[in-house]
Image (tube, rainbow, N blue to C red):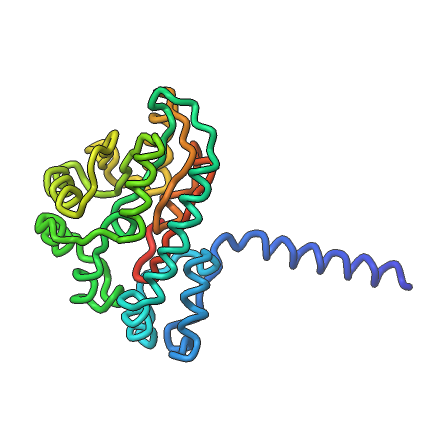
Length: 251
């Protein structure tokens, strides 16, 4: 083999590999390229985070998302995650003293905002903070049944439950009211964004808050959330459980 040709081939390969590594976010095809036939595959891509950051549900997939999120399949998917979460929780050897913690997100984890998203295209319209704030203050979000069962079982097992949400401090009263009306009781702490948390990416904000919990002497055995940013970062749980949500993405 010609040494010059071999060296050239090696340089080309290294250049290509470097280019691949430098692409930190995988992008979905354009909306026009996603036909309704591929919406289930699109949902898989966003649930597994293969899609990277995305802004809204593709127009061709709105009906698919609506049927999924309001139907039996979503309910069953949530039940599977809840059952696996509970099986893990039952296997944990608790240290006792109230120091065994489980962290829950709230929106699309403990409470369902499907009635709100139903009015705005199930994630097709870009998020509107003003209208969502009005929805939060209505305190009308129902519980996700599978996670209400999990929540109550965790309390029975002796876990201290922390609620860590991206909602803001000014929404505390409405959030507490909504949780109580939906059947949630006796959480250890409800953590919301304060003024110093404004503008922080969710993954940074939630990691910081989990670290504060750990620094108080708690062991975070489990964590449940509908966004990867609820679960990733640092000070993560021993096991994290992702709830399905094809309606929106939070980095």
